Image 1: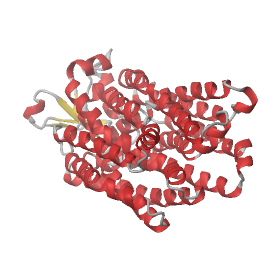
Image 2 (image 1 turned 180 degrees about the horizontal axis):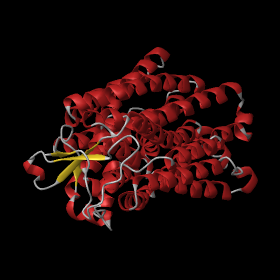
Image 3 (image 1 turned 180 degrees about the vertical axis):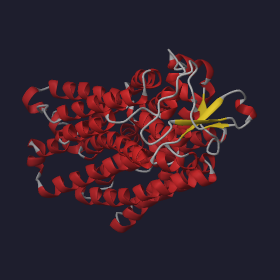
Image 4 (image 1 turned 120 degrees about the vertical axis):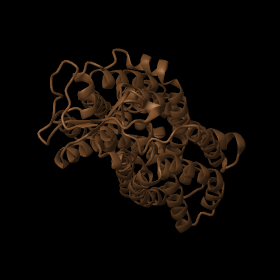
Length: 466
């Protein structure tokens, strides 16, 4: 049975958009979801284009910041910490990076509650404002030579604020896109989110390469490193403007119109969807470790551990990121055609088999080989990264989708993602083995393989509306 225009429980029509009816309900007789109504959106192309733009820019700003911090880690170490052993200083810089992630699960709870209780648009509009303001403030912090210990303390405080605000971005944008997407293209639409993160990393890599190529060490430490962070303010304001001009998703508006929005979505998620939550945390693990090791930590690894020039390291990563963005959308289409589980399992298997040999080839020092290896590792990661947003969004029903996604994604990233650069540096120091980050990646891939294998396929099912 299909209804072209639904009515809420009180008899009032569900709000629509200027492009047409907001939602279309369907009952497809799925025994696993008996008695539940599911919905798919019926909106126009103009609205979907705006949704894509709004979802893209927030994650772009967030990951542009993380990229700049990771790519300029050596310079930031010199600015914010006293002169000491370079490896110790670098470890402290990455420790600050990791500590800022510890607040992300808390942010996941808060933004998940706002997104599932008040609305996806509200959560996304505020998260981008707070995040871009915090990023801008980093550029204003004096260095250790000026204010001493207060320099790293202020940096830590601001990065904690960033971590809190950013914890709502990836999950919210993914849920927003999936709930607006055509049923057979949810994987492709959701791939916009990791594509935006890679684009942010790409711009960060380009700016880092440009700055390190044009400025000497003294200029970089004095003022050059601040320039990328200053860009966050205008980009954040543009993103907030776009988001406030959109209506909330058809799925959430229908739920709110029926007064079915959960008063305590996080509590409801833990009570009724804890199995999916555990599976999601495990599935995210490979993405968490792989993303930060391959796309954020890699330039530092190439320059500090393998002796490649800083500019060459940035250029190699930039080339890899360009191909990565193209692979992301291909992966989204593959997941729509063959299913989320098959693509995610393929990613885990490839990492288990090829990571250690790939890192061994990086040690050759040959620039062409390094670029090709980074492209290979990036392509493998896209199989996971390009599929994960739709996989996680489809795993949870509308009433707890934001919370389920935000908590699982941020919990795994807090424990294993933000700590990945620090762990990689620590493992190399402890083992005197430059292949240590590769073995760390293999372990993450094994856990994700088990978690995904235990989950159910959702790509061919309508979104659950409960």
